Image (cartoon, rainbow, N blue to C red; front, side, top):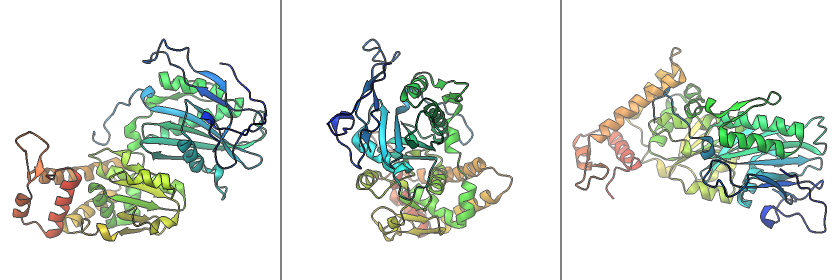
Length: 424
């Protein structure tokens, strides 16, 4: 690889692709890099190029049971990119480098997510979230007494990927941070990134070793604590369960992002039969682009640190104020979320399981999952298969003939809608 350096010129700072960026970010200290993607050995592009090379660029601103094993996809199918953001002694946070490339929209998003542009100057060492089906993971460190980063006070390493696995990418970004602290250049980081991208492993006596297969997806799904949620909300946890079963929109507020992320990442486990963490958007700003992307989702769990989100009735069916331990059902969702005898039974089951000192979090999830399976099996008994062999649909007359309490019948009907079992 060749390291290109860009000297100062009369031209203003330009972002990758030639677009000038917002926020006053630009060329600084005469050094900035970008790696242009070239074909990797062993990929479909093999033979078309010689591998990644470093070129000069202007600096830019801005369904198993719990406990069962699930094999991860090869890393080359998961990692999407790596990036570097720095904050200098002037207090400017700048997008420095990325591989293979990224859009101006994504650069702006990641600058917003890293804590280096925050006015409150709180250092969040690790944050993660999702935007338009891409996950981002950001580790931020403070630079102290560095001989190679003299004009840098902080920097963030950003990884984007297709999969949800905070522990895996936190471990990898920590290694990349140590590499950058030592060398002050993205070249060495690239070597480790490419090693993980192609082989799933990078090894270093100085900076630590990383083995992708050590981080199973199932462990990421089970990393949160259902017991802690039940301890905080008790019987009201059934509101969260019901909202998730019906694929409603849940907004969670707390002023601390770490609290938001720990809570929200656990919620999808309440509907373990789906094993769908794509509904999780753990770090959302009240930004037009982000909210537009969020609104394209049928149901979701969205975390906010801005209390003004409580006024955005268009964003949620259920609002969770973690700071005050309050759950509110919006007016438009009350009919579908009407609670009855069945919900009381489910709530009691969840609380009893969570309060059992002999049960682990995964055992509590399994108990809830078994109850969920019982409900779905009961619902399936009211379905019929059409002549063309399509997915079974709900026979509403058969459901009404069972004469369930109104709240139970209402829940099963809306559950059938969520499971796409209604005739169109």
